[in-house]
Image 1 (tube, rainbow, N blue to C red):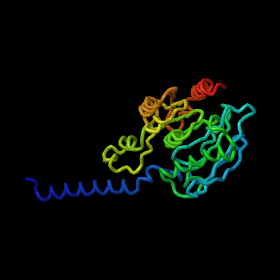
Image 2 (image 1 turned 60 degrees about the vertical axis):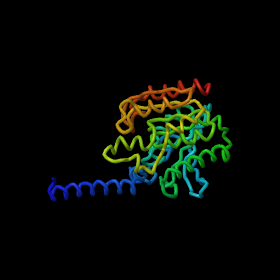
Image 3 (image 1 turned 135 degrees about the horizontal axis):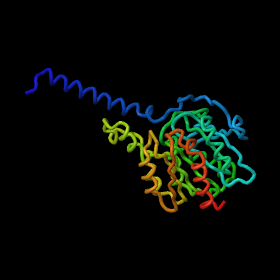
Image 4 (image 1 turned 45 degrees about the vertical axis):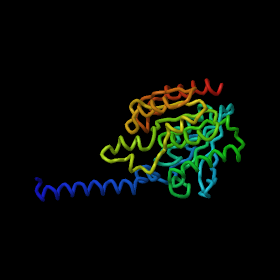
Length: 278
């Protein structure tokens, strides 16, 4: 039989484990959203990258005020890109991407989710979906952009938001970069020592949303991704409907598109020529 000291140790360990699980359940939003990393303040504007832009203030259906930038395209604009960014920082930390997409011939509308940058409110899953819907409405109603002239782009957490949006509308195409299949799938990998599938209050079910998307889909993922393994990207590709393309690049989660350079740009360009016809 176990001694009382051993039973006490077992109970202590069990109590600590349950306390950890409770903390993970109560504070998991702090493990999902990082609006203050590196900062919530806007660090720069597209002007510093040589790009023209307009500051846009708009509102979600629940009244939360949102902030974004609209960047006009070059003389021969291919389409308008609706940019759903990842879970850290804000729109000012995406200038490299904005330059790449401008050079690819896009006009770009990038926005901050509630609780990020100059947008009001506090981030939540349903909130991010409402924010993306508001961005779509701004483009299609306020600016009069036709849905079949919009390419929805999402990176990392933004891939789930973009897939959800595309499942509810009919964009010209959908591009998902460095996305995960679902929040519980990724959490189970990172927090393997916790019953995260029971604890998770977030779905972000990217793979499930993809099954409802009928636009052409480009999945981009790095084989070296150190945060979201490439198997997530391959699973997203498997879940997507035709027509679809998988572009595998090199480099880590945050810098892969820069490290891959020409291969990244040429892969997107080839996809656009095939499915935009220009």
